[in-house]
Image 1 (tube, rainbow, N blue to C red):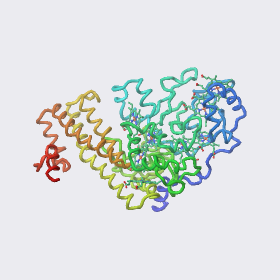
Image 2 (image 1 turned 30 degrees about the vertical axis):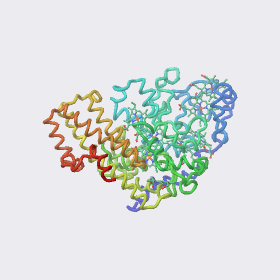
Image 3 (image 1 turned 180 degrees about the vertical axis):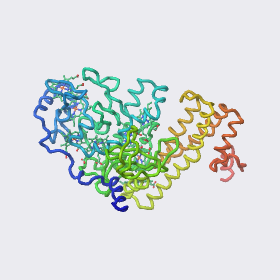
Image 4 (image 1 turned 90 degrees about the vertical axis):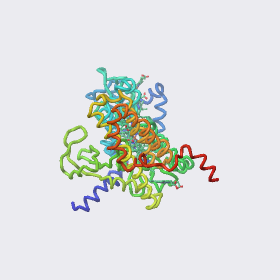
Length: 482
Ligand code: HEC
Ligand code: HEC
Ligand code: HEC
Ligand code: HEC
Ligand code: HEC
Ligand code: HEC
Ligand code: HEC
Ligand code: HEC
């Protein structure tokens, strides 16, 4: 391939993926479903757990003749297979099971940040779940959003400590990752329902991902609320700018089709930044031949196509394609351009990027360097979350720090400032630095503050003489002016 062909190919995977696959909605012939033995499941389950059977009756599956056994059928070798009323079935219908008919969606979600959501708890933060919470919290809290590792007992039943669960990166008994019913509630498995912001908000609310509140407080949320009936959520095709224009939902920007940009079940594709890290990085997405993916910081030289590099699990993989942060941003902007002008979109992205840079330079990097020094000089115990400054630092980047960055990316002024950067600043100046002094002593603390804070342009104001004090002068000055 020539360089321009390579470029087109790379943009292709972001924008179109493999177009021929999109032509067919279901990847197998109708003769492959409608198992006659499935009829018995229905007549009996009409009586026991009749609610779920009624939901199935209202689904596109029932309409197309896809029945209970078509999904729940298992092979005797499956470790979660059970014999049930004369049939070998499994309770869990994994993404791999759905992929028998929906190869495209399966391939897209495979290797996505969603399907890796269990690993991030285990790899990045074992202490938070285990030390501050406990096993019961992991099962009923973290795992309900991130996903459990489903354990099967000797008799084939599912271990109640790990199921029920429809976490986004659930590790299934067949080794596949994810749970398609986390967005498509069972047993309707509706695409209209999954297009609603509520399909995402279930998990994307609270400090880990404050997007519910942000979306609702944005002009997009305002327009969605006011023009819900114009959103064409039930439509078979759902292309922003064509089938609806009233407002974008979470799905529009992160998964949906817009103009020439095709829908995609990998929600991370269009994100240029990592917004949930102590210091944000622009990231390149590496796609391997087998469909697995990893994120690399922009500073890492882009791996060449065909070269071998290590994957998320440490094993080696062959690189199929790399999407630079620039291309990912380009894909996101294609969404905006369906409803906004180019200058509007560029300028908005500029405002957003500047907030991320400000957070990094002013608070993210200085706080991280100070923490690194405290650990390396033995002024903190190696155990995380046993000292006050560790909680202050955690919340600085994770709670208010993430809120400021998410707020700026999705246009909620309140979360960018009052719920975001204002709290970052307050906690940095009035909690983090005083704690530093308590831990390191005045002399050491002053040296660190000089090295990482007051020498930083963003904090220059601390050392400048102030002409007036607005805290006391505020009311008086206003009155004098009037
Ligand atoms: C003769 C009635 C009957 C038939 C036929 C039947 N089921 Fe069931 N099924 C039940 C009952 C009763 C339960 C247990 C309900 C409970 O535990 O509350 C059950 C439980 C289940 C469960 C849940 C198992 C678990 O782990 O909790 C699944 C899945 C299931 N059935 C699927 C099927 C499928 C698929 C078929 C067709 C192959 C089928 N059933 C046929 C009566 C039936
Ligand atoms: C499109 C595939 C599909 C079809 C068709 C389907 N199921 Fe399911 N079913 C699932 C999935 C997915 C789950 C969730 C299991 C999990 O992954 O945790 C599930 C879970 C269940 C459960 C256990 C969960 C609960 O809420 O109790 C029962 C019982 C069940 N199905 C019965 C049935 C019956 C009866 C039918 C036919 C009327 C049916 N299913 C049709 C995919 C399907
Ligand atoms: C309400 C659902 C929910 C719960 C409960 C939850 N998380 Fe998360 N978590 C998320 C979402 C959504 C993200 C993705 C944030 C993003 O990428 O913007 C996330 C991100 C993370 C991250 C990546 C960095 C960060 O902190 O944002 C870690 C680590 C993490 N969660 C750990 C945990 C642990 C440990 C628990 C339990 C003690 C937990 N989460 C509970 C939904 C949840
Ligand atoms: C993060 C939420 C989410 C998850 C997880 C998810 N989906 Fe979807 N799915 C959606 C949304 C949203 C749509 C509608 C997309 C659109 O029209 O823009 C959709 C649409 C679909 C469609 C209809 C496609 C069409 O062109 O009509 C199928 C089939 C589907 N999903 C299958 C799956 C399968 C299989 C899985 C698991 C591998 C899965 N989905 C996991 C959100 C999700
Ligand atoms: C045996 C084949 C088969 C299996 C297995 C299967 N589906 Fe489907 N699915 C279909 C067919 C057929 C349709 C209808 C397609 C259409 O209407 O164009 C469909 C439609 C859908 C839709 C679109 C529904 C809508 O509102 O239009 C979603 C979402 C979906 N399936 C998700 C799933 C999920 C999730 C699983 C696994 C739990 C699954 N399917 C398993 C065959 C299957
Ligand atoms: C069952 C919980 C759950 C649901 C439902 C869910 N997510 Fe997520 N989402 C997560 C978790 C957990 C993460 C963090 C995963 C990680 O960092 O590996 C995440 C990460 C993300 C990310 C961050 C990707 C990145 O680049 O870091 C985006 C964007 C996202 N989700 C969008 C959505 C959208 C849009 C929907 C609804 C259509 C949705 N999610 C539904 C749990 C969920
Ligand atoms: C108008 C488009 C738009 C809408 C609507 C929208 N987002 Fe976003 N979202 C963005 C942009 C742009 C970013 C920043 C992308 C980047 O990193 O360059 C972002 C970032 C995110 C992230 C952080 C990813 C990371 O890198 O850590 C998550 C998670 C997320 N959005 C989820 C959601 C959810 C959930 C909803 C609905 C409640 C939603 N978004 C609505 C455009 C949108
Ligand atoms: C489906 C159409 C649609 C899409 C796609 C869309 N928007 Fe919007 N956007 C709107 C509507 C409608 C409004 C409210 C109208 C207005 O007053 O500007 C709005 C308002 C805004 C505002 C507030 C402007 C103001 O005057 O306060 C910003 C900022 C914004 N959008 C940014 C984006 C970005 C960035 C993207 C892409 C990531 C995007 N939008 C995608 C429809 C859309």
